[in-house]
Amino acid sequence: MKISVVGTGYVGLVTGVSLAEMGQNVTCIDIDTAKINKLKQGISPIYEPQIEEMMHKNLAAQRLTFSLDQDVNYNDFDLIYLAVGTPENPDGSADLTYINTTVNRITQDLQHATIVVTKSTVPVGTNAKIKALLNQNGAYTVEVVSNPEFLREGSAVHDVFHADRLILGSDSQAAMAVVEAVNAPYKTTVIKTTFASAELIKYASNAFLATKISFVNEIANICEATGANIQAVSQGMGLDTRIGNKFLKAGIGYGGSCFPKDTAALLQIAQQNRIDFPILEATIKTNQQQQLHLVERLMQYYPDLTGKKIAILGAAFKPGTDDIREAPALRIIQTLLEKGARVAVYDPIALDNVREIFGEAIEYCLKIETALEACEAALIATEWSSIQKLNAVTIKNKMRRPLILDGRAALLSLAELNDIEYAVVGQKG
Ligand SMILES: NC(=O)C1=CN([C@@H]2O[C@H](COP(=O)(O)OP(=O)(O)OC[C@H]3O[C@@H](n4cnc5c(N)ncnc54)[C@H](O)[C@@H]3O)[C@@H](O)[C@H]2O)C=CC1
Ligand SMILES: O=C(O)[C@H]1O[C@H](OP(=O)(O)OP(=O)(O)OC[C@H]2O[C@@H](n3ccc(=O)[nH]c3=O)[C@H](O)[C@@H]2O)[C@H](O)[C@@H](O)[C@@H]1O
Image (cartoon, rainbow, N blue to C red; front, side, top):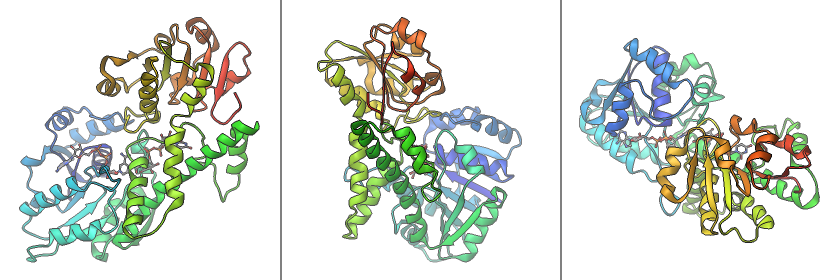
């Protein structure tokens, strides 16, 4: 089967490379010339474990090709995956510009029936509109299958090969059967449903996980006020199998390209249908406050931050990725700069992306020790393993004041050391 995947971002590239690994003949397409040039040389434009090895293997086996959108004819494919971005509009709704451009472009080429599979996260009603657009001329039927993606950045390849479920939504059983067969090697539970239900499953899942995080962060704040310990509370809650122990890790809130935008988009969907969604509103508000929680705690130590050097350990929105979209570290850095602090940021792989935002305004450190040098406090924003390995000797030797504010429970063992000042989210400082 000849498959094309439009969009070579986190979802498109991982989807395309994984399908090639499963023996399919795959062309990954983008409009970004620099990305396609890199990919043709076997270089991944995103940092994602396993992706480059798998790319090399399938490029060599000639099952995988990379191409610019202008160089392909969409008529050549049996299956066309849409994996372009659906970013946030200023009002919170999903911006469907890239989806619409892609669908129009496909329509220009198509001269026979085919199947279009939507991987991108799109609002309820979008796949029905995509199908209508693709079938404007009426000479043949282009089927559409909604197939939302649930991979996480940093473990994307693993997640595709060990997915909890395959969600297919369509008004064509035949088209769903084709997509199910393509995904058969992944051996997962398949749910076949309508466009609308498939679209909502994606938003409801992300919003539920985001709500779980905001809930546990509110409990963490109660822990700080009452002397309870969030690590014990989360563990105790998580052992109840109805609750489960995942996504109960308190910290400085969720970031990334999806939870913030998808919670905002679901709220828009509710509002457009005149439905109140107070829980989701609270989830979003709590997260915005939680991202600055460490700054509030820092101000208890230093009411005036002017001229103080503060180290930020970790910039990526989570470990294992160079993605800094909506990362809590960015809001922390911005706020510290506004308060007159000097900021030195350490991250093992995301520094280039941070430099694009803050330019010369802050110091960039490839070594933790450089960031800690003569600083008045260090704030942990990402639980990279290199940060978790930080030891008391380095902290005492390098920092002017050995004060660690831990937003990711990365250094819990330090709490036992008397000569280091240590405060972690969800425990009294
Ligand atoms: N990043 C993630 O972990 C996940 C993302 N999603 C969803 O998947 C979709 C894609 O997300 P990402 O991969 O993160 O996006 P991304 O922003 O990393 O990549 C999108 C790619 O599409 C390309 N593109 C835009 N217009 C195009 C066009 N007309 N033709 C060809 N290529 C075009 C862009 O140049 C870019 O390379 C979004 O809807 C997102 O919500 C779903 C699950 C996980
Ligand atoms: O739609 C998407 O894009 C994806 O969004 C998330 O994946 P991702 O954003 O890559 O990362 P997560 O591991 O979910 O973490 C998101 C954020 O929540 C934070 N988090 C996570 C778990 C937790 O217990 N506590 C917590 O604060 C992380 O630090 C991170 O900032 C979902 O987990 C994926 O299923 C989904 O496909």
